[in-house]
Length: 222
Image (cartoon, rainbow, N blue to C red; front, side, top):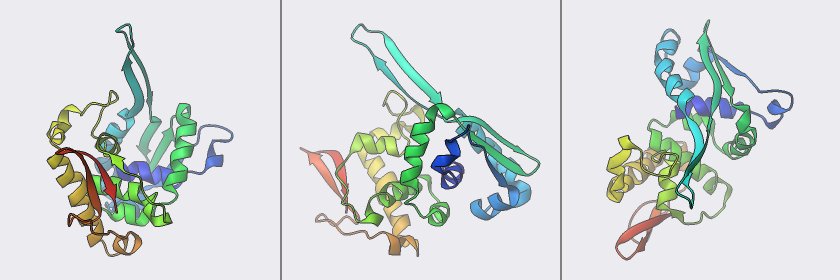
């Protein structure tokens, strides 16, 4: 999913939205080269991924002071199709400003390296760090709950998704999303030159934990 979404974002320009909703098309040859999948297997491989991506939405759900539930959900895409060897992706124009803002940050990312990273959580961490570290900005402390959102673990209400319940244990989150992701990124021959991971005072590579008492409340990437 991250690869398909990144493929569209990498080819998006702000002026694409000037006249009407943009359409992005990619041939099976391009997809094969970028995603590392044989051309004849593109359809079967992308179908379940596109199905999940088409159902993705952004939104909020809140409980009012009167006890009522209010919500606002908007799907990411108007249309995703693969026909005659061409993948067509049409973003939802109701999210035009969000797409343009996101695209500006994505421009800082080396897309070839992004596609080359294998694990989903490693991709998300690479994207996060690329927006800051590669340009010499010092990253602020990241709250743990906000990071769980970045890694796609939370639903629209800000609660852990049902299939991500194991991440309620912060040690599971630290292991799978942070330590294992940093390990994969530092072992990548190009990314290790692009992003520098320093060792913290606690001996952890690439980050320090922020604690309140004995509870981890945030992370500072180094």
